[in-house]
Every structure is written in C-alpha cells, then in structure tokens.
Image (tube, rainbow, N blue to C red; front, side):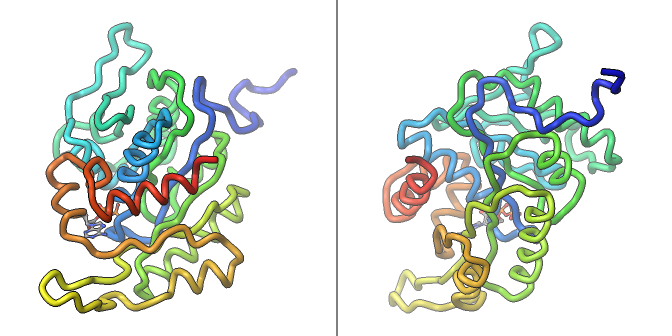
Length: 259
Ligand code: ADP
C-alpha cells in the first residue's frame, strides 16, 4: 500500500512457464547461443515443452540457427506470437530490430524490451524456457535475474584461460544476484581430427571441469569442436535435431535438466 506499483516487487513469474533457465558466458564466441539452441532442441526431443528466448542484444543469432527469421506478429497489438521450429517455441530480440542497426539502448529501454519479450510473448504452456543471455555481466543479466524468477543459470566457457577468467566474473555475478548456478559446460573442449583421429586441445584442457570442482558446481558436459555443429548452426537445423554423436551428447545434457 502506498508503493509505486513497479517498485519493490519481488521477481515475477512468466505466465504458463514452469521454470526459466538462463545460459550465460563471460565472453562472446564461446558457443553460448549454440549450446542454448541445441539444449532447447534436445529437450524438446526428450518430450518436453520448451521455449527459447534470444536475449543476446549484441548478436542475436538464434533465428538463423533455428532457420526462421520472420518478424513475429501481434494480431491484437498486445500479445506477440512467437515462432516455432524443431519442436521449440522461440522468440528473439533480433526479430524486433531493424536490419543491421546496432543496438545502442540505454538500460531502461533494454529493461522494457526484455520485459515485453518475456511477458507479452504468447509462450503457451512450457516446462522450461531457456534464455540465451548476452555475454558478460551487464544490464540484461541484471534485469532478468532481479525482475524474473529464474530457476537458475548455466555458464558456458571454452577451456581457454581468458574465457575462464571471464566465466568466473559471470559466475560471481550470478552469486551476487542470488541466481543459483546449475552447472558449467565446456564447449570447444577438444578437436578430433576427422582424418587420423588425433585429439588436440586447441583451447587448453580440463580448465572448466577444474573450475566446477573448485566451486562445488556440477560439470554438465564437455562438447568438442565439431564441424557439423558449426555447419548445422549456419544452415538453420541445429545438430541436436539430427542423429549422431553430437545429437546424442545434447540429449544426454538435456536429460540432466529433466527429472
Ligand atoms: P556465442 O553465443 O558464445 O557468441 P555462438 O554460439 O554464436 O557463440 O558460436 C560462435 C561460433 O562458433 C558459431 O559460428 C558456432 O557455429 C561456432 N561453434 C559453437 N560451438 C561450436 C562447436 N562445439 N564446434 C564448432 N563450432 C562451434
């Protein structure tokens, strides 16, 4: 009573959505969006109702990875109709932006856009909504963790020292914001030569697992550098939608989030 209605509110749920899991990383280019997308597709293949929100304002890549880039419709000017592909309901901040315009929003505008994307998208009934965060520790992460009730966050890193250094900052941000960290994923872990089978550690070895152990957090997966993963991402059919070893790895990862 007497409070401004938008102040001092606790974190809000999203109607129809059972749980929200954010996928973050310390720096860009480590495969965060690739992991978020494939995890969503793999969860859908495990029979779950899954949504995917691309909140990576600086490089929204999910529409391309999912193979659908239509501008979402809003027949009543209120609810936004999401897109559907590979069994997943998805929405991207990129679909709301003019082509090739850089994002130069200030915090309040960002907050408004995020709230609109989460709150006004017609998600339907979802078991899990996966949110692909921008890299780093900025306004989007802050808004999401403070304004919405997150089940937790997953942090993706390569084994490279600089990536790990930044991943630690992301982990410490989630700790500060009291968002539980559900675990760490190492991407671009190893490279297995398709000709001779030799395994090379291009970005280092074992760093993410060691970090997880140091922090007492689950180490959820080590995903190799894989040409099919890259090609599939570029072609609009994520590798997890197909068959083979990578699809199986993602399904195994998906099962870790499903009881
Ligand atoms: P981020 O979201 O962290 O910026 P992306 O998911 O956009 O990173 O990935 C960056 C690039 O690396 C993309 O071209 C993607 O296809 C590629 N990529 C990601 N993970 C892998 C992997 N495990 N093997 C090969 N290429 C990968």
